Amino acid sequence: MADRPVAIVTGASRGIGHGIALELAGLGYDLVINRARDEKPEVVQEAEALGASCEFVPGDVADAEARQRVVDAARNRFGRCDLLVNNAGTAPKQRLDILEATEESFDWVMGINLKGPYFLTQLVARWMVEQRKEDPDRPLRIVNVGSISAYTSSPARGEYCISKAGMAMMTKLYADRLAEFNINVIEISPGIIETDMTSAVKGKYDKLIGDGLTPIRRWGRPEDVAKAVAAVAEGRLDFSTGTVINVDGGFHLRRL
Ligand code: NAP
Image (tube, rainbow, N blue to C red; front, side, top):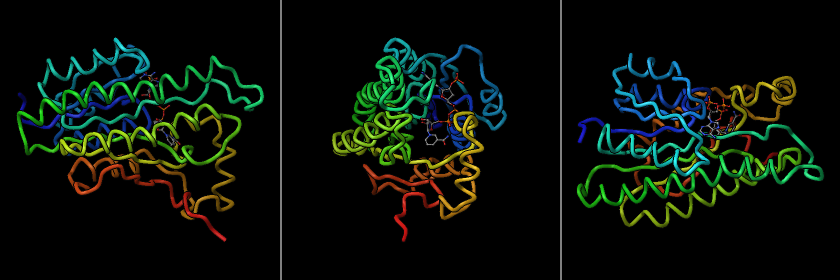
């Protein structure tokens, strides 16, 4: 087994996942880096420059064989997994009103954003339970990247909202089930973060943020989310499980 802790980060090629991978590399983690497409992303070299050993495993998290490849890569290369970060996610290909939206888009978004992380977590959790038996003390943790969409209605992308609401429940379920093994499960709930995912609606969100939608009047950055993951990875929340960390500029506050 490798000496350094190992993290699996899905969707680590761009945006929030890219920020998380580099933050973890800086904390001394070795990495299994996943993305959907086959091209090796620059983040591999960037993380290696920070001292991390990296295994790149392309594949669609909605696909069971791809999920198995991700976990096998961690086992074969490093022999351990201390942290799983379920970050890969997608918006619908087309924003369509809930009265027009298609089953095809529902299945596609739910497959990537909910079924994928749900069953990847199952695979990793089974392995973490084995690891716990071998080592009663080593911290083992799971982080799910959820969204303010778990509780905020956007009827033009209902399938996305439902997938993130499902992920919120998934965090509670695994937190409950895995607590006896001292495996902590935390949801990080980003607000509006500047990435490729939000680039198509940049003008709309520039205006909303400028008009005060979020108490902190700026876009979030991938590093904002990555720092919250780092807090978990550094063990700052080890008496918390099933917890939601809002990284949203205060969006979740109700205001009068
Ligand atoms: P992004 O910039 O669009 O990047 C998405 C990442 O996920 C890429 O690495 C992409 O890989 C990967 N990915 C997409 N589909 C995948 C699949 N089927 N299997 C494996 N990997 C896949 O997105 P982001 O904004 O960083 O979002 C990351 C996470 O944060 C998502 O779960 C998203 O729902 C959540 N989130 C984002 C925001 C926001 O405002 N941006 C807010 C709240 C929550 P490729 O590069 O190969 O395509």
